[in-house]
Length: 385
Ligand code: SF4
Image (cartoon, rainbow, N blue to C red):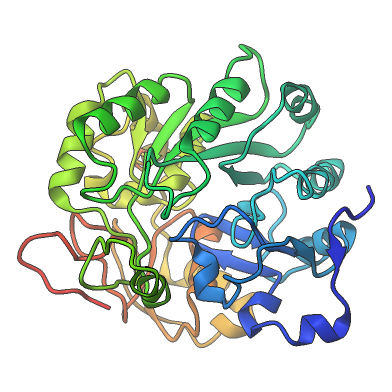
């Protein structure tokens, strides 16, 4: 399929911020492919702020789709049939009119390779009736569409209305027989902005259409806080944090709004795995306090799949990559392997997905009940990073 967005020249690519040039990057929910960057939707909390790409409103390509897929599958972190993949989740929306041919080309290419990896596609854009048929033709990849919906009405924070994502979710979930799965990606939940009882009820009603729902907070990092301040937007928090923020009382209210018949998850990978009838690929079952809202059949699936690796097994997997050869196993419990000597979060995700077991870096301890969440809004603890 032809490139529909402009292809940057070598010189233009060299001028991009360093992280923007990294087309394949490991993020927590999967290995992420981002050879198209730029988005006009202007969500104030966009992660593009943190890549030096905020001003890039027109999508542009760093390479062809075929080259990009080749780079992905040849990447040292990519394991066929194992590594979860995300397409265009960092710097553009995969269903913008100019981007969608590229999204289809990438999915088709992966599918033609008969790969059975999870593939996550996150969008807030309008989808079309013909997309159902097209996506249903994919035979091998485990495709999940995640519809970002916040219910935020403040146009300065989210100029593109949440109702579009809600309609897309309903449209794509409607067919009784389909190979792909749909998820209500309810985020970012921000106290005072979109957490009224009416907001929570609306999300609950929307969740009835999806195969599963995930709720998460806001990545409120320094760059995003600066943007809020610079543009006079109401600041949701006084502090910034590396992880996403969901205060405890808000979580309690979210849980109280949902019932047992509406599957709700705290973690993206849990919802994706559940929707495909598979155990969580991040091994979150090792952190049982995350699982107290999970359907019982899913708990059983995850429990049965959960295997605590021996130190030798962990070292064997670490041996496969140059940057994890210096790994030191500090401790392995039912919950997680605690390691040191990892240069980056990316190699940690590699180990975690290869083992289906939680791997924690001794430098970033995970605290009970707030696993993977920032400490802001939780009682009695200071922030840990
Ligand atoms: S049982 Fe736990 S790990 Fe498995 S999907 Fe549910 S919440 Fe996630």
